[in-house]
Structure formats: C-alpha cells, structure tokens
Image (cartoon, rainbow, N blue to C red; front, side, top):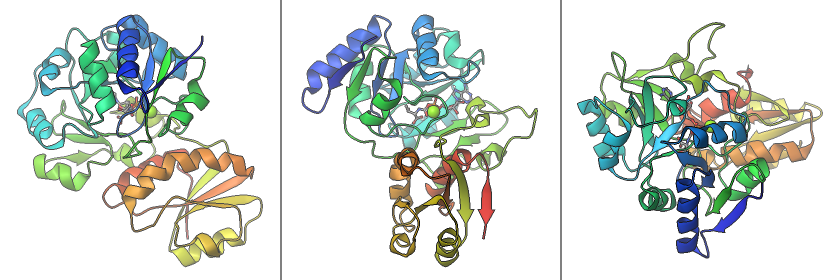
Length: 339
Ligand code: TXA
Ligand code: MG
C-alpha cells in the first residue's frame, strides 16, 4: 500500500483532519507523541488493531497502550477505577505516564492481548490529542517501529521501518522526551512500576508511597517466569550490530574501547575526543534528559558504522537515567561488561 505522508509542520489542520478520517474508517496511522512516535488505531476496532500487530510484526501476546485526550474519556476505556488512579492522573497527566487498570467492555480484546486489564495514557503532545478529540476515538498505539527495533523518535525513523505497511504517517517534529512512557500497574496488591520513563520512581513514590519496582525493570526474566508486562520479556531496541553495555568511569571506558578492534563506541560527549575507534556521543553524562532524547537515534545510527561490535557507556540509574539504562540493557540483550 502507499503510505500517505501528512505534513503536520506546514499543514497542521489538514493533516490532523485526514488522520482522524483514516482512523475513523478503520485505518492505521503513525503520529508523534511527546515520548516516541506511535502507530495508532481505533481501540474499538478489532480489525484495525490486528493490522497494527501485522505492520509491526508484534508478538500477539504483547498488549497495547490506549491513548485518551481528556480525563473524562478514562471511563470509556477502564472500569473499577481506584482512587490512586485519579491521584496519579492529577499529578502526571497529560504526560509520559501510563496506568494499567481493569479493562472497560468497549475496548477490543486484541488491544489487551486477552488480559482483563488495559494500559491507559493521556499524552501531552497536541497532535495526538487533537486527533483523538476530532475522531472521538480512544487510540491504541504501540511505538511505531518494527518489533524489536529501536523506538522511533523522528518521522524518518517511522518511514524507515513502516513505509508501505501503514495507511499514513503524520510528520511532526522530533519527540521531546525520547523514551516511552512510565508504566505503572494499579491492579495488583500494591502499585508496581513495570517500565521506567520520564516520570521517575522518586516522583511516583510521592503519590504512591507503597510503589514496588518490578524485577524485570533491570533484570532478565528467568526461563518460564511470567512477565507482569508482557513487553518486557522480548528482546528490544536492538541495533543490528552486536551491542554490549559497559559500566565504569570515563577513564576506564576510554581505555577499554581504545584497545578493541572492529568495534564502535556509544559514549558521553565528555569522552568523545579521547576515543580512537568509530564513535557516537549520546549527550553529556550529567544530563539524563538529553541521553533519553538521543538514545534510540544513536542505536539506529550505529549500524551505519559497519563494525562487528558496539560498546555503550551505561548512564547513571538516577531520575530518567533509569529509563535509559532499562532500554540499553535490552538493546544489549543483557550483556553487561563491568570495568
Ligand atoms: O510512550 C509510550 O508509551 C508509547 C507512545 C506511543 O505512547 N507507546 C509505547 O507502546 O511504548 P508499546 O506498545 O511500545 O509499549 C507498551 C508497553 C509494553 O511493554 C506492554 O507490554 C505494556 O506496555 N502493556 C500494555 N498493556 C498492558 C497491560 N494491560 N498490562 C501490562 N502491561 C501492559
Ligand atoms: Mg515499543
């Protein structure tokens, strides 16, 4: 199929209108959010959701996040909503924050991959909110990448992965946050952080003092272990080049990569000029927000360096650094070198 390119930078009104018409007629459309680009479909349409899974090559048991554009829409999507959900909504919505709640009846079963829960997010990006409001539809939207590849933070990334496989892409600017939303489950005995993002554990604990951080945030699931969030069990975000995460100080990292052959480094800007192998900086080690903005782009760019292996200098796990670390350890299939 031909993927329509809707230019929301130069022709916003027309692009948003056409995207909403396509979604209302059961099509699938990639669009920008503040975290990463999403591949949207009506959360009420089983066939549109199935088309999303097919276009991405996504495993059938990995459920999607449903996006809303007002707190009022929450009751159309979820049921038996606990007080904690409203407290979180007040603090973190609109924004890069997703809650897992009991699923409402109207949501297509394929959205939740057969679970009786649904993940819900009210994003802050104007484009997706306007498209939701115009179409009147809650939109299920996973990240708009081919399954397993780094998430897309620019329209060009989406086109690289999905051109010819989806009805349209809304071309907006680059994503401000750069890593996907924080996911918290509110359906178990206590609130559980399933995926770290720009809303940090420190911020969450102010609203949810009994928050538990799921083991899968930083560790690999053991064989046969059940994932609280199915998405966390898959190999993810991987460049084609074999990747290793490296923990250690700048001096040790520089020394380590400089004595390796046929490799590249993804490093901090402070180390860039000391490294003698092909290298890409993903920002200052002191600014986790910048590292988050750049992490998926550099994972895509490294393949062009055409080397056998890439060594990635691990960020601190503070603040949004935890989210960056979580994505990188998956990109490296949990292969970590400690210096
Ligand atoms: O920032 C984001 O969240 C982006 C943008 C597009 O909004 N979306 C995104 O979707 O990252 P996706 O599909 O790439 O990741 C959704 C994550 C997966 O790890 C999935 O397993 C988890 O949320 N998830 C979705 N529904 C769930 C549920 N009912 N219970 C537990 N985990 C769920
Ligand atoms: Mg994804």
